[in-house]
Length: 157
Image 1 (cartoon, rainbow, N blue to C red):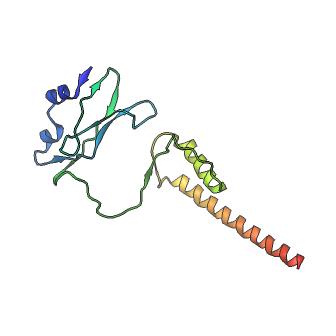
Image 2 (image 1 turned 45 degrees about the horizontal axis):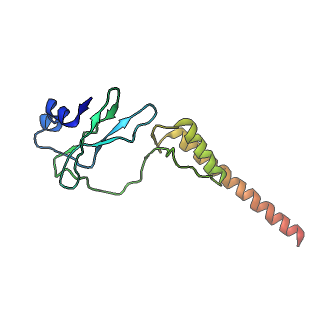
Image 3 (image 1 turned 30 degrees about the vertical axis):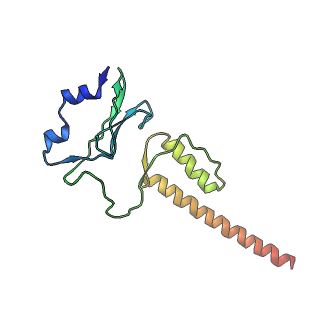
């Protein structure tokens, strides 16, 4: 069992050892990892500052943590430079919702089959192609139904 202070005493802060002019960002944390879970329930903040206080944490044997080391040459606070669309997604295992559209169910089942736990990118070419093909098929089906309805209405008049 180890405490955070013991680890800090044994290992100097990595960002100070490598780049003396950098600041560690206060918005990043160390998360516990488990098999098939990349962000566990136990979290240890990376940096203590006046806004957030780092609580003591004890590391048990066989626990694994992802250590995020994020540094900047500025004040250590992230800024939004330009608004870009999110390209990396992760399935929220706790949330369930019954999807109504066939296209939505298809996309969701593809995500569950190919990326049940790990994050995935929207640029995943195969999934994107399947989604576009499915949208095209849905559009064709809507046009066909519309044509059939027009045909039926004309016959009934």
